[in-house]
Length: 315
Image (cartoon, rainbow, N blue to C red):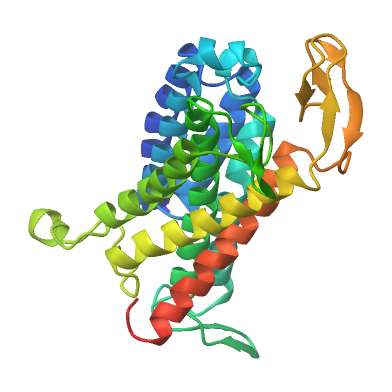
């Protein structure tokens, strides 16, 4: 109990200043501050500070690129609302899946056979016995979801600066206005890869062997069946799959509206302070829902690749 309370105290001393700085720098709204604090604390306490660092890398990079050349993006009508500050809906749409996977793994520890059973061997739950590397699966899902969200955000924020109009992913011969859901561009695709590599590279750095000579063990010491290079591959694959699905959903089933004020097509039900007119797609399948579903698919893709590599001895 002492170590749990100590860990909680350290987490609070780190998270509270970070949350306040993010709010002061207009990276978060008040509701976004609370949501980000809850997600960050949950990841830290249910997993470890090293897992939190990966989430922090995602948040900081995506927030910075949201603000990068914000006025130009605003002139295109595709900038984030509230001067780029993330509200609770956006934070939860990007954070709920990684936190849920961490919580799932934590529950399997509690119901299983102790620390060694948490991924390094197998997990048993009474009469139910699960011969799976639970820690590895949990981490792969965590990486896949975060990589998808990071890739999608950077693809949008950097893709908006592409010198030529994007092309619709379902009709590559057709150009669409910058910021259109389902639009893809060269800069956006490069950003997708870089966003995925950011997540995988951060994880690989925290699991690198050189930590043994520095502090005795890597920060991600519990992932003994998950090689650093595999982390990069899993995150890259999950991010690419998830981000592609996000674009496909954006071009097909996501809801689209037309602003009554500026007459622009938008994925938002309210635009320029007025309710927008419905055009097509599912009215309830908005951008946050697309993020959740594509993040889940990216996580499943990451799990598949991890188990495939593990099965052939390359994990």
